[in-house]
Length: 68
Image (cartoon, rainbow, N blue to C red; front, side, top):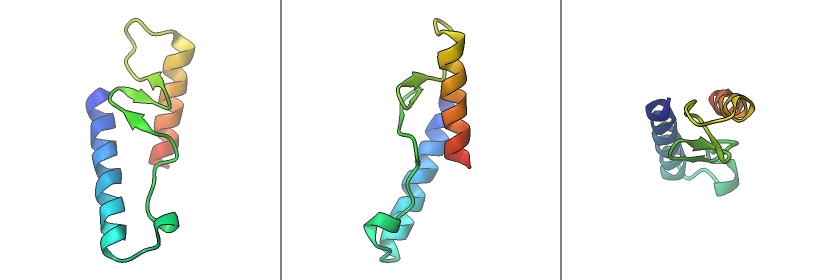
């Protein structure tokens, strides 16, 4: 799951750079709704080990929202 988040973050970075290259205004450039930082989405860890079930579920929910 951590590698999947890394791929999603890389895609967002690519899409944003493409928008900037095409001179799209900064407020309309591609941006994920929830920040991805290593194995965390909006400060909830995506790894299941040593994680509460509800926090893991929230991390998955925010990941799906980013995909949407």
